[in-house]
Image (tube, rainbow, N blue to C red; front, top):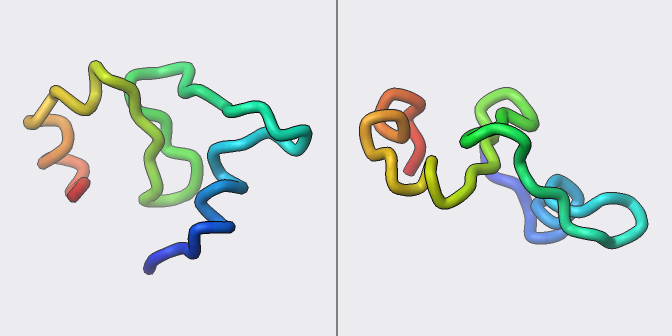
Length: 53
């Protein structure tokens, strides 16, 4: 399942327009949809385990 650009913006932005940053290395914001940071982006084992492409 893919989301549109507008849906992705809705996931990453607070209603007032400020960007939301993950509180963990990789937050699952919706089932199967993760927002990560630089630490999780560099963790290939975790990305593969979660089937992140």
